Length: 460
Image (cartoon, rainbow, N blue to C red; front, side, top):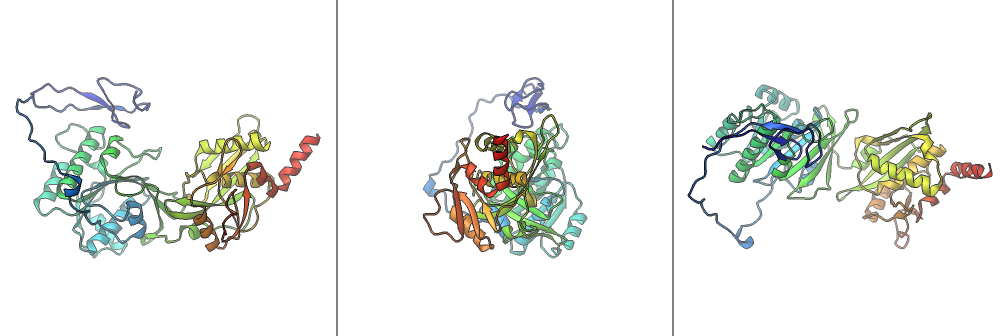
């Protein structure tokens, strides 16, 4: 038996070291390197391994039908349903609704005839059953158990025909008794995920792993787990809002730019078929500092309100606070407004918020953010029933974005009559009136207060 030695592993990227290090050289993370207990490895054997059998792409069989849950928003994000033999990792903040969503999906699959099992390491079986009854799912034929030990879980699943759909809530609570480490450590999480992934492939079962997240919003545990699984989903949302967003960041069987929108109610999570109407439902008319973005999430056009507040800053460093958008992108837009439009925003505090708890990442939001900032600075609202979209370059140009027609059709369907867009769309017939801009400075025509202030400054 070969001698076993402890090693040190980065919980973020999985890099291995022979000694402890304060900073991981691979990913640059601080205090992410943890000791991994040694496991004895058998000595070298002279015999060779058993040869594997190869197949051609044409002889591997047809695609296996997916498990469609009937929850359209969930099926949209997963690419049409869960794929047999796959492993899915879903993460989110505590209390965001991960367990509720999976319990609803499991019950829906069980009612359609799929053999389902729900294994929790955090709740007793009685607690799970009570939550199911509260959600109106008490009659669903779901097998429920409370367990933490990996060997017992795998033995129970293999003792009888293995369930086709299995939920493990959560991966951080499991432990393998062969490893001398506490549950939730790098070694345990990786070993348990590997074993469950092998089980899913061997038995053609779908295994869903629930993962905790860190205070930065990333899935806790080694990042190598995200590379092991087939799909990684994030369940997002603000506690002060009823909306919940399910987003795929990795999907071997579907797109990664789709989102599912849910609303949290006392009867669980309900699907939102028209997210645009929901996100804009609480708008209080046309007010300064607000602009409606006609965005795209995956294949779905989505209208959302961008809110900005620009106020004079006290001497010193101005404050920049952002919710729902990239802070670096805001800094770029502010720099372009200063350099190309002659605005001295360095002397102002800037606050930006994407209404409804949604997080926007597409560049098409640049022009809407700029319009909201200018509206707040001038204390003048945009024209009534107006949507905005477009990408801003460092040269101050407004550049076209993809799927402009779909954005405008969604806006017209919701009653908007005017759009501020990049140049080049007027050649085609549009469902609403459009104002095109090739340069960012041209948008100042909507804010006479800023133009008057600039003229006064030039006179002074």
